[in-house]
Image (cartoon, rainbow, N blue to C red; front, side, top):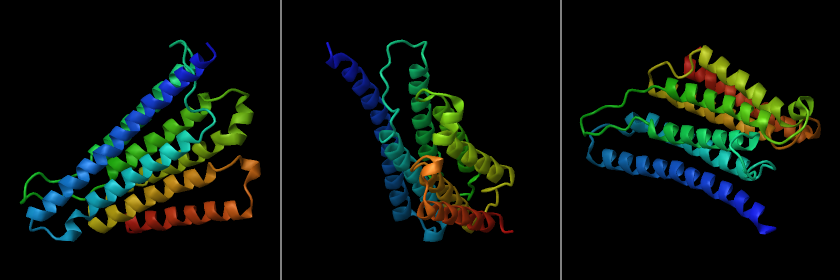
Length: 232
């Protein structure tokens, strides 16, 4: 009987990990489609850079999320009833992985040799902002404890990155329809995701100078790539 709670927790883990596998599998499918397109298309390599950068963004988002989720103290909670915070946590896990799948599936890959790719990263910017906002809600309900303790431990990270992500969307990141602008926009979003993960490595009070240095460096990259994406 003592093994039953652990088996229920393992069921939660296995279910979400299967969804992660489906999301990363979509990237593999899109990469193969892109290779097929390049084999029969007369378009230059430069023309497929936006699709490549979108796929790289999706791969970074999915892989870093899996590592962060798997190493979280609150992943794979035991669910005994749908009317509990644990079920809401599972629902958010599923919603996040579905968004990862959409991020990978939405990559613009032409389906004919003469088709061209229209460079744009607005959708990716919106979706990443929604994903990071969902991280904040996950942090809010996961685990137990007072709100002040949650904020100083992990909620401050998702809150700060949520604000940054929506500021990027508000200032029109990804809206400039050139290959270089889309590339910089995707790099900016990747830098933001890595900033989030760098900030998530430990509680606010436990970051040392080296850790803060990495966070500041990543934020500088976010700013540089954002400027490149908007042509300011």
